Amino acid sequence: MNHKGYVARIEFDERDDIFVGRVLGLRTLISFHGETVQELRQAFVTAIEEFLRDCEEQGIRPERPASGKLMLRIPPDVHGAALVAAQAAGKSLNQWAAKVIEEAARR
Image (cartoon, rainbow, N blue to C red; front, side, top):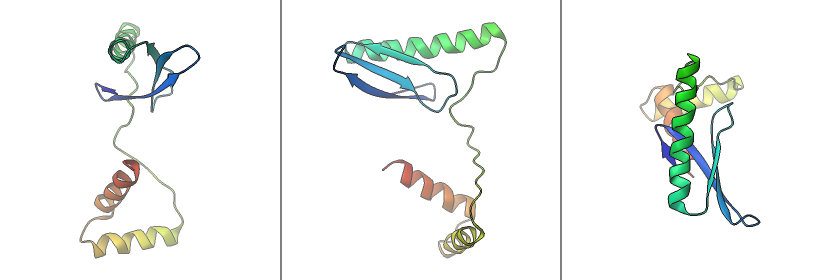
């Protein structure tokens, strides 16, 4: 599920016979639940809207799941091999790495 850039993982709780969701990529724990998909979707939207409203009321910037900037520390030989692979593909290292990470994340 996705709402305003926030993404949730959904699981089914057999014991309570409900769907349970948790927003991913945040330090803040945001969870919600529903008995039907429709209830679950509404609970997700409500949870995000309440989170954003609470942040506004407290005068703090809401935490975002990702900024789009990623800093990695990798061994020099891996860095070199990635640079060669990017050049061979006719791309910058950033373009190449973004594509590789995107493909791996969508598997």
